[in-house]
Image (cartoon, rainbow, N blue to C red; front, side):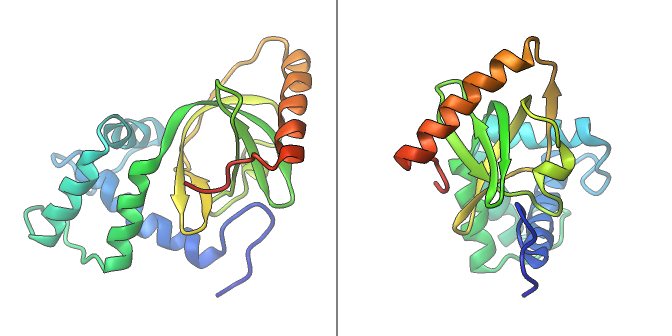
Amino acid sequence: MAPAKRNMLPPDDGDYFFHLFLPLLGYADLKNPIIIGDSPDMMRRAEIYWKDPSRIDTYIDDIDHKRTSIRISLTEEDREILRSWKRFQYDVFYLASHRSNGSLLVDRENHVYRVLGLQSSLEELLPKTPVEILTAILPWKDVLITDGLFLPIFIENPDEIKKKLQRICHRALEQGTVITRF
């Protein structure tokens, strides 16, 4: 397995994520299961699962029993990973900072999450912090990732927000309360 670059999954894991995620998105719109459009289309499809996580079980069952036009085979590891995604957090987060072991996202209750990028680091995709983003945080083996879909939101008074987020992240790092898995 190739080594991980800073702030992201190892390349094989990034590829594996998309091997599982893209058919799931295709299944969300069975009228056009293979044609996945732009980012808004992908977000619309992903939201179907984030609004109703039980649809992941339906997807697995339909794949296993060949009740869909999507023709893939799932291993037991694939099924476990897909089921783990039902423990997601889908919300608006502040992308507060980038660190050597992951980027820090802060939710509305000031919980701090350390996440890795999929095939690019969040630092490469969204270098300037803070930024508010709508995204899903998912478990991936023993770390957290995003679903790779972001809707950035304009922030008024970013300097004021940055100071607040720095305090929140510093406290979480000091207290060891940064969430790194679910």
